[in-house]
Length: 266
Image (cartoon, rainbow, N blue to C red; front, side):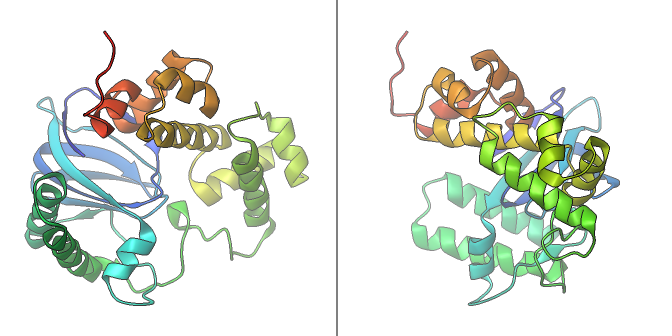
């Protein structure tokens, strides 16, 4: 992604991937891992997979940035065989070498570079980035939680609720009563446990899964109206509103960018 925003505000969300970005002009402010951060010109943003965050311009002039999203297993493979997933302790890095490497990587991925050069840029950026990663090797969830292996009933409640949401997020209109019944506890306990484990309210998490499903459908050239219906949105306008909040563009623009060779009617 390469974009300039002035008034756009990202809704709190997370990505399935590592997300690495360099701020080219201005500054972006955001909350992540229970703290407030600012990435100014020349700084780097480093989000772990499933790190909930938002984002908006820190000044009147807005900000311009480049962002690269890399699947966790592929990122680990760039560091060597059988490497654990690294974790970044700070979402903002002040490292000119990484900023330059990410900028060159983005240009290679979006330009006419060869596959060999792209892979070399990926390896180079990964090697610089991992120097700032934590030594911890276990896979953490959002906000530093480890819901899969943590002790205590809260983590187990959150895991059961998450499983239910993943099973039914697009086809069913889940209620808090459904979540409480699946977890075997009160609605308040569900909400508190889920927020603590995953950094998002259950409804935000469900909506994010729906937006991700719509994005995958659009990438396959499914029309926005059909993608909205299949992903569980009330209508195309409902999808458009939330798609813009998560990705900064409309579903139609995203679909058109993924399939620029296809001529649209009208």
